[in-house]
Image 1 (cartoon, rainbow, N blue to C red):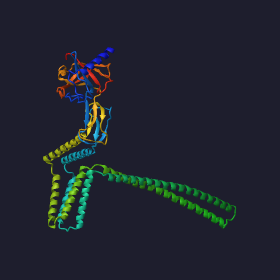
Image 2 (spheres, one colour; image 1 turned 30 degrees about the vertical axis):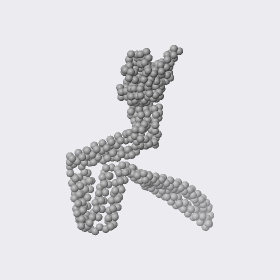
Image 3 (tube, rainbow, N blue to C red; image 1 turned 90 degrees about the horizontal axis):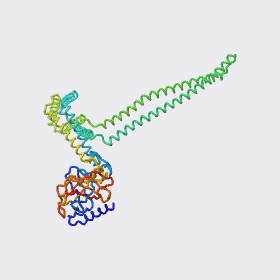
Image 4 (tube, one colour; image 1 turned 135 degrees about the horizontal axis):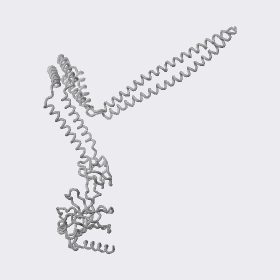
Length: 506
């Protein structure tokens, strides 16, 4: 071991004092290499120049991962989430960071709606008009003929105001259908559901209380009836005993028996009234609870209907309503001499609509409808691809080395966000071989590798790649060589210094 240390120290002294060899720059960057699995990685710190000792080339290098990738977003924006931290393992295709893509999600949703509309229009074109549509078109013709018949009627300001209000309402309806339910409307409908449920529960509780109260009252009245019957029975029995023994009842005894009999009858009547009232409450409970539950179901149905996206038929109906409102307003605001012409145009349009509905679709129309579907599919794919550009996916299986941003931070296009490396695939990078040195090296040449930090460790390897283009430096042209070890030691770390001894006579 003492001899080994002596040899090692001697070699390093020769390397550091080899003034006859081209000196490397004080700091050296490892440039990008065209090797398909290797990405440019800077070598940190100074390196001693290579030397030829006894015909053997010895050079210094650095421990580097085979692949190091700096990942960035294609476009700039606000970081929405970072899903990894240093040390995490990622697989190729994993989403590891994304920008705020809410607006892009809306664009994708709109593209899906446009595609659904295009498909629905295509299906409708193939299936033809429904009986309801034809009936509606015929009714529109009848209305247009009626308007034409009395087209000379006077137009008042109130008529124009009403038509303007109808147009505003029609446009508002279309806007609501396209945008969907607003947060305010949703909150209002949800509040209506909660209020209906509260009314239902309150009525259930009230009726339950009324039943409980009446049941208690019936029990009390039943007891009063039994007491009254007992009082009457005792008095009647006593009076009967007097009569049976030949005695004569006093007027007071007769009156008392009569009074007690009336008390029994009154108690029976009150008990019967209470029972009728209880039965009425029970009947009302069934009908009233059903009515309150219907209110809850209606409120929930309104909320569900408002939450569902508008169908193409609803959009088309809203657009048609706007056209009708515009036509009506135009009809009311044109000059009086032109009113008949307007009514005639409306009638022609209504007749043309009916003819279009009843006609067979032309091949050109079908082709146009199919083209609209294809265009909508392309727009959807473009929107989805645009959204994917605002995400970073791991291009390879690797380990996260560093994370340079946090959620909420604004980044520029191309700004480094995350660095990953293949920490299970290592190499030794020798960055500064001169023209003389590189002429002694061939790919697949065997090498021996030693390490300053681990003097007891020696690894065998081979030259895996020689940079084909040299880099100009202050001392001439230098070349980078990459070494692949045959084995590895877990004590080795990124950027550790290594000494590479190339096979003699390479």
